[in-house]
Amino acid sequence: MKLRPAMLFFALGLTLTLIRAAESKPTTGSDPMAQMTTYYFALITKGPNAGTGTPEEREKFQAAHLANIARLHTAGKLLIAGPFLDDGDFRGIFIYKCATIEEARELAATDPSVKAGRLIVEIHPWLTMKGNIRDPEFPAPSNKITP
Picture (cartoon, rainbow, N blue to C red):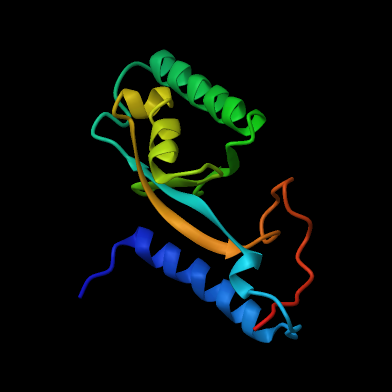
C-alpha cells in the first residue's frame, strides 16, 4: 500500500503530538480533547503550469503569491507558511486557522499562483494541542494533558 506524502506529513504530525501528550504528566479532572484544536494542513505541489512564462511573469506571480501569504497571515488565517528547500514537486506547506475545510479551500483559492495552475494545494484537517504552534489565541502549552 502506497501512502501519499501529504498523509505521511499528517501522520508524522499526529504521531509527534501523541508522543508529546503521552510523555506529559497528566492532571486530573478535565477532558483531554478540550486541550486540542483543529487546523488545516496544506501541502503545496507544483501545478501543471509551474515554471511557465517569462522570468518577469514568474517574478510577478511570486510577488503576488507572497503578498497573498502576507494578507492571510495579517488576517490571522494563515499561521505557518514556508517552502521546502529542495527543488522537487513538493513546494511547501501552509497551516490555516479557520472554521472548516471549505473555508481553508476558499483561502487557498485566493492565491494567484493557485488560480494560474502554477501551484496545487491539498488540504487536510489536522488535530494538535492548543499552543503547539504559534497561535495568538492560545498560550504556550503547559506540557500537561489530562486523561
